[in-house]
Image (cartoon, rainbow, N blue to C red):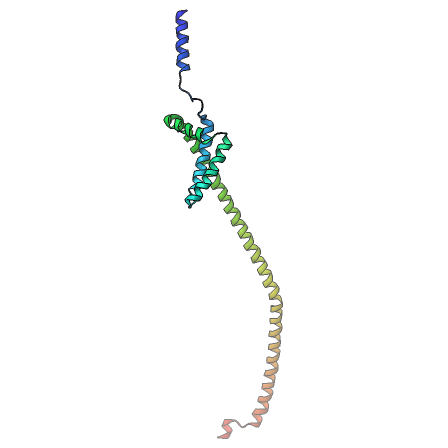
Length: 185
């Protein structure tokens, strides 16, 4: 019986003294989400060139993140310090954060690709519609032009015949009235 009590006491001490997350420290799953949002904001802030503007924008974003997760900057900083002293827990969190960031990156790349495909498709449709409209306009213009060309060619041919017949008439009359060079000599 004494051995059983000693075994229970040792087991209780063994499992009861296991280091855990102390009170006042943000739990790992919540801290993961906070760090993820913080890194997204930091990435955005790195694209702002004006340092003063970035600081103003950063303060607003960080306050929004703290409000979203029901915490404040003091608790966040205290938790971050604690997780930095416990690198195993921090590493596990950052593996999950890395997965989430990669997933988001793939999602944005896919979205960008879809936007490019739609833009290309839309551009090609616009070009096709413009080409069709232009070709219809040209056809509309060509029909009257081609008819007028046919008429013009017919009129030219008719006038040419008339001119040729007049030339032939004049040649016939001129040939008889004008001596040929062989006759002059």
